[in-house]
Image (cartoon, rainbow, N blue to C red):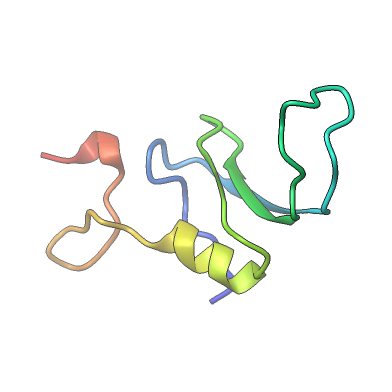
Length: 80
């Protein structure tokens, strides 16, 4: 599974990024980031971070709780 489904909130197009491990220099109260994949909707900025594995991040983003009778994803704002 490599294709990202549209955003579950607005139907916008998501982008996946790999963020390298890093230490926050300016804001020292934040913990070091171990690195991983980050998916964000270009339209509504809904976002999630899901570990280091790209395929796990895609699977987590594509998981949908709400589906219609045909098993198709339903955006949250279209639920009845």
